[in-house]
Image 1: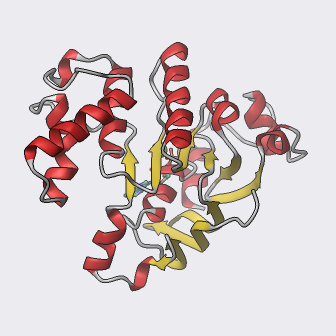
Image 2: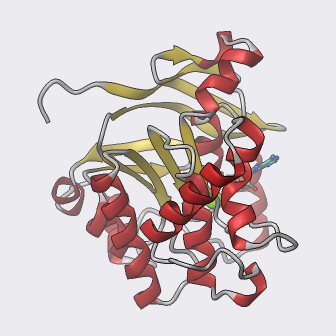
Length: 266
Ligand SMILES: Nc1ncnc2c1ncn2[C@@H]1O[C@H](COP(=O)(O)OP(=O)(O)O)[C@@H](O)[C@H]1O
Ligand SMILES: [Mg+2]
């Protein structure tokens, strides 16, 4: 990519919960238009990092720049402006079960714009069509499969035409075929809408099918950032173990309660 415009930058972001360090000096950059994947095991801090990148949590130290603005210095009004330019797809699709699919998707428009209902209806139709759910407006979330619910969540995330979409484990809990459909959709949307995507996942298949660049996170630190090929060929033993899904290697699995508790306190 020539002339890379940086749309997200984190500088040395650290965060503790209680006396546990969850993020330990995270520095990374995301370029406009790319699909940037943050991979790592359960509990390594992926969701926490994502919440810092969107300004939902504040770091104890370090800085986050989103679309050129340093987040800690923003007024509520400025933060609202930025929030309108980003879309978030949560791990659980986070739909309101008492609302129709259409009302779920249109919620951000009804909350943040003064568009007429007729215009909103058209936008909702278009977004549902983009995620392959044409004509699904009147169904209730309970009538949908897990993969369809994720797609509704995705339609809602793009309803305000965001510049960046953040995905937290978009394929978690889906069978491999549906996971493949979601991966393809993430790629399609990033191309069709020339959107920047930040995807948090531990699904290796998804990493290598969607990423332009990958950051490997381990115990709140970035071990390496590179293209999928560079990560595949990494000489870092932790990355090799993670990719191979091997129980043997430097990444430890706790079988003794005392070892685990000691690890937590560290
Ligand atoms: N609000 C919180 N308060 C205390 N601990 C938290 C909080 N959020 C996350 N954690 C802890 O931080 C660690 C990282 O969590 P998370 O970012 O959700 O990991 P991941 O998304 O990689 O699975 C976990 O051990 C989790 O229990
Ligand atoms: Mg998570």
